[in-house]
Image 1 (tube, rainbow, N blue to C red):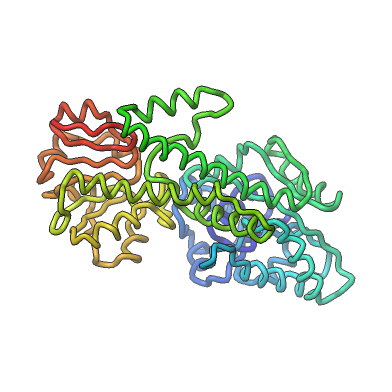
Image 2 (cartoon, rainbow, N blue to C red; image 1 turned 135 degrees about the vertical axis):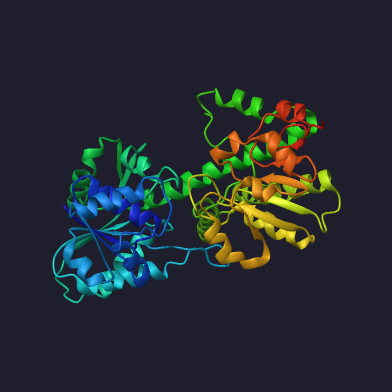
Length: 436
């Protein structure tokens, strides 16, 4: 098949590259001229393991190309996937202006049947309004089209695997023609398919992310209880996770959720249900717990060091999670701002997210080349993202570099007993702090 991807951001690039890998001809469209120029030059504007190699291979095979022209994409593709951004507005609702703009341009350029597929995360019933908008802007009233919803479930850091080996493929359709095309498209994945109405498909994405965010916040609230009672959050959540009805995934205490999906989708879902007359107080509590967890972590640093003015702190890990350079809603940004407000000076390090942080923060912090440089004469090493390389640090060397032997661990990377034996003051999440 010929596939057009409208929007070459994170979801669009991964989706386009993976469809090309399955043997389809794919054209990725974006209105950012610099981004398309980079892609045509063989450079990838985002960090995602395996994506660069996949893009290069399929461009070389002639199955993947890039353009800035929506009309070209409409004429090229049999199926048009909309992968544009739907960012949060100040009231928590989702900004659908980019999708509306694309729908209008698609409708104006259609000359024959097209299947238009929502891949972006949108409020339930969005397809209904998009269909009305499309029909209003058709240049030729006789042209037929279908709208469908095919929500993405790609986790940053494992997106290619998530696409190629999905738990499920959700297809929201309102015609047999649309269902047939999408089933044929996804058949090579040999994955479970749920074919449903469009409204249900749109709601599935928001409901799934809200539930996972709730699970994370539950673990974090439980971590505070563990700290107050002398229990160990790792042991408690392991015991819970062995129950097949609960499971262990997303039941890990830390600094809360971040990134481009959970914060936006949770706010959007709360706004959506309020528009339909329901106060989803449970999800509001999830949001509050997520914020409280970060504030609680700041208090841990203050407990360890006292007055933070003029203290030098090493912030280790900046992306919202490992294996990505995404810093959207990253806990590190909240923590950095709070610490700077106390008068502390900061040196920061992350394996891949440094350029994005520097573009955001400028010279307000010092950028280190590695963990050890960040920790030179620092009063504490503060671990914010659980990059695997942090697990294999030379801890005796780290101790020698630090001004004070203090580690505050927001991701429970290290064993408290080992850190105590090495002579560190060590505090983590949901476990008792240890002293040398």
